[in-house]
Length: 124
Image (cartoon, rainbow, N blue to C red; front, side):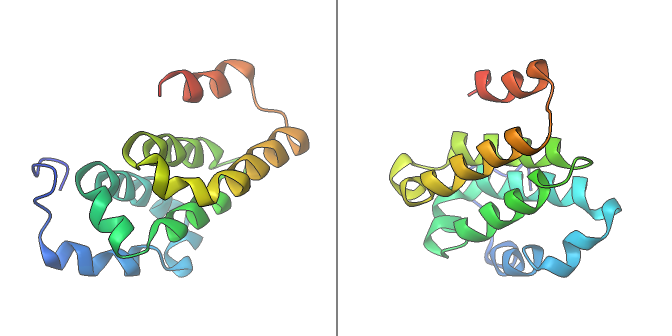
């Protein structure tokens, strides 16, 4: 899917997307890294279709779950970085307050190294 030209994602892949956002898949630690990579591929290759299917909230729900975990917070930041890079500002605007709330909550509840956190925000 990562090698597919942008906008050329086939319909079967798009039908698979709601299944990938199911909470049960995110409970197994071994699934997290490949699923994040897959979601990032969806955003990179088919962000307009993701938005059209109204799945952006699901992506942000995954981000919320991942950033709340010390073990998987880096995956959450990676997903958020991809969301910000490939989603139009207009589509992301309704979620700005929630995103900043989650980031500030994470920073105030658990220490994150300055170097790692800065890396995510400077690569935009």
